[in-house]
Image 1 (cartoon, rainbow, N blue to C red):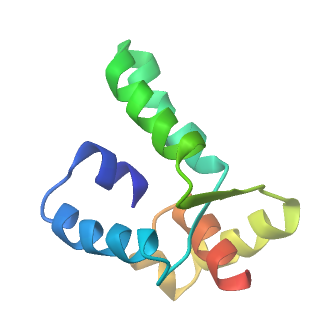
Image 2: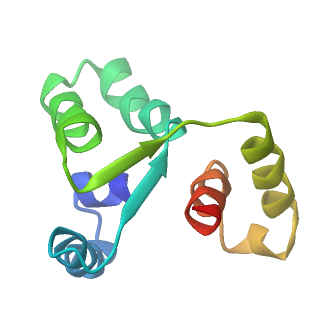
Length: 105
């Protein structure tokens, strides 16, 4: 979700813009796991794309609208179960971690 928003991936970005507007207005909460830091920064760091890296760092660490949740062993184990269940066709790893964090908050 965060990566698609920052990179502006179509056709998702128009839906995500509405979601982020709801978050900014306080109608929804946005929480992701610390694994998103790895996921989001890996490609820009590898490519040496400092502009994209800065955009991700801003979204991850300076946005008042997004919370970062630590990843613990129980969260990882629960996410593994989600990843191996019927949700597997809908959620790709590490997304189950984020999904579990949101559901368990």
